[in-house]
Image (tube, rainbow, N blue to C red; front, side, top):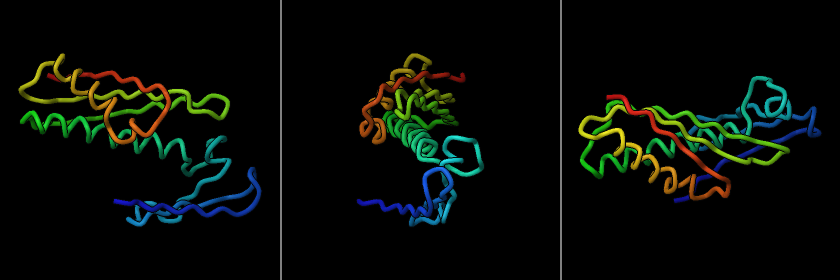
Length: 137
């Protein structure tokens, strides 16, 4: 499999603007710029997209492990905190809340730790990744 994304940029770094497009059309000339990245202007930025991708990948990895165990989650909700200092991503923290019948809170934590290390995005990154699990009975 290969995935293709496109970026377009015009102008200098601080005043210029860019757009991001993905073949699915979900990102279609989506605005990004210095201001969306560092000054809070509406639009996206690479770090937000990385955190969002990691949230999706990790959540699907947890679901895959649960499915392999014959379990069907009622719900899984993940929040990702990406920390950036001095223009370097220094850490990513995954916080998942799950409601899954037929499993204990400790077993759920074991599953999430496995997914933390083995989801595709986690394996592609070279920053410290941590996680915490919140189990809903």
